[in-house]
Length: 171
Image: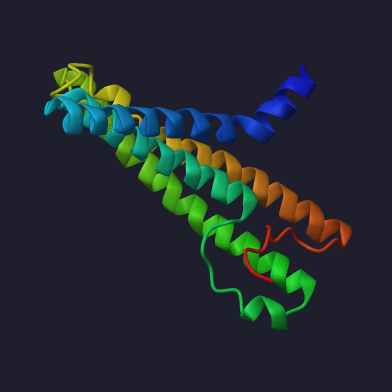
């Protein structure tokens, strides 16, 4: 059970991103063929692509928090001690955590209002709750990954290890 949770912790975002990306590409491909060959397109195809992209963005944000892959200016980090670097990362995670909690609260309110009034999408005629839920799900995942990052940084700081800085894009 613990091993399954570790595998899920390591790969959940990757598999979700793969599924939404495959759905986006396949639907877009089908819709391009329908437009160019049959001169006909559908509303539902556009909606699937749009909402898949939204889920991709929010799940990708959580994956980026986990890997410390967000765009940042880290020139200062090269000139401070490892302990100060860890404290700066912890401070950044705490600020991001506060923003994510506020955003989660307000995005949940939007989902609840949509559920209350029963709004549906135009093409798929599916409850908008499923699509609007991408934002609170994304922020909940971001919060989870921030807590993990905070605990990892705290452990590194206590044990005198260098803080995890994520992979470098260009070295």
